[in-house]
Amino acid sequence: MNDLTIKTAIDYELPETVRNRHMIAGEWLGSADTFERRSPSHDVVVSVSAQGDAAMTERAIKAARAAFDTGVWSRISGKERAAVLLKVADLIEKNVDRIAVFETLESGKPISQSRGEIGGAADLWRYAASLARTSHGDSHNTLGEDMLGVVLKEPIGVVSIITPWNFPFWILSQKLPFALAAGCTVVVKPSEITPTSTVMMGELLIEAGLPAGVCNIVLGHGQPVGSLMSTHADVDMVTFTGSTAVGKLITQAASGTLKKVALELGGKNPQVICPDADLDSAADAVTFGVYFNAGQCCNSSSRIIVHEDIAEDFVKRVVALSRKVKFGDPLDPDTQVGAIVTAEHNAKIDRCVKAAVADGATLDLGGGTMAVAGLGEQFYQPTVISGVSPKMAIAREEVFGPVLVVLTYRTFDEAIALVNDSDYGLSAGIWSENMHTCMDFARRAQAGTIWTNTWMDGFPELAFGGVKQSGQGREIGRYGFEEFLEVKSLVLRIGRSRAPWVQQDA
Ligand code: NAD
Image (cartoon, rainbow, N blue to C red; front, side, top):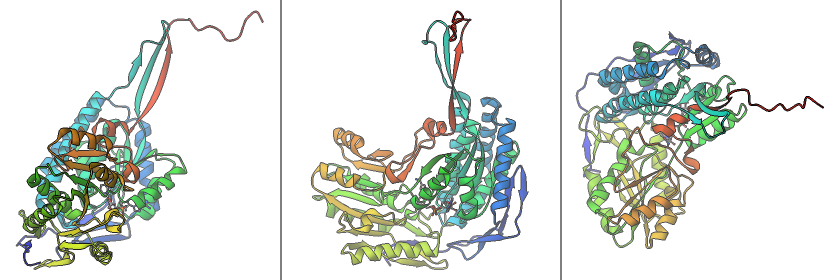
């Protein structure tokens, strides 16, 4: 462990504990019960939040329903909606530093990353604003002289938005501005682990002039808040990001009213490293892909599939780079990898790694929790595991920590078979200088996103989502926006050409 790069605690004036309340119909409401979030890296209570119950959730859903039905948002022009979304984007940029400190203290992620995610989220709001103005349906002028067909796109209605703890502000911004651009009204439930940046978003929405009741925020746990948001008859759609296990529960809960469900779930995302690849770039991207957000990332490239001729050399390169990654104090602007979100999750990561070693895998680096001087023990060492067979749990299950698994292949067909031998299908990547190899891979790999000679580049324009048990539906991009729209067909007869059905002389 001594030869890792560890950033110890820096001097920093920590903000006072913030008090979070629900935002319902434009009002801030407390609850008798509260829950607190203690920082995983700094020994402070970051937030104390009102604990939502079924009655509070019901109230939020009613507010969203009433706001939708009055048309205060759903029936105004795209131009007016876009104006509000653009104001929110400006306000996000003005508040980056304030929000980022709480995001870092609650999640444990590095402050430079929090600033990047919060500042970067403004672009999602601006892109969604452009969609609010350019959304349109279809017309059919080919149905005959006396007919015109029009397909209208309408907001789907009231949307429940349920988000996880790993990218609280960013994932909210992958959903909320798109739902709002479509004209929907929403109820949001952030993770109980990271509620604060969502409440701060609520403040910005009010400041930007979003009408009361269009966005409502309920704080609390999956039970009863998230569960009621998934079953309630007044909700038309649930969009959820989180674990595959909870995604399945939500699908079951939503089936009672057949509401639409969009799911962004887990992944065990592979990168294939071909012998002709630029190995320096590939090793750097693999190192980034596995340690970004301490591996607590749906898009973590937690599984690499390396040609056996270069495997030993490639693992050495990744191990050497891993030792240089700056783990440690999340508040240090220089830190690249921060804390693990909870002690329970840190222990779970460690159990997965220990089980892999017991199964016969080889530890090339790391393999244990670590303490950072002045900050406690909720950190995990950068970990590289080779000698892994495809049937081992470590090769198949999402660890959600800074843990890289190395598999090897001989033929390209074998590599593709390993890529697709997974319950998941969120993203996949390939490193090769041969464009034909990359294109062949792109067409055969079962995943919602394919990266060739890069990893985790994303753009608001490009849809994101998974296949198989990584989810259903898409978010961001035009496809993500369309998820929040319902289609209605209009059949218009021109003139009095309709032939009577009832025969008058009968
Ligand atoms: P989680 O599934 O435990 O919780 C996510 C949210 O669901 C939280 O707000 C939680 O309170 C709520 N919830 C819990 N039980 C519920 C229920 N029965 N009904 C309704 N809501 C309920 O996930 P997490 O631990 O917060 O996040 C980690 C998981 O999220 C990982 O599996 C990761 O892969 C996944 N994830 C996926 C993406 C993606 O876009 N595909 C992005 C980030 C995270």
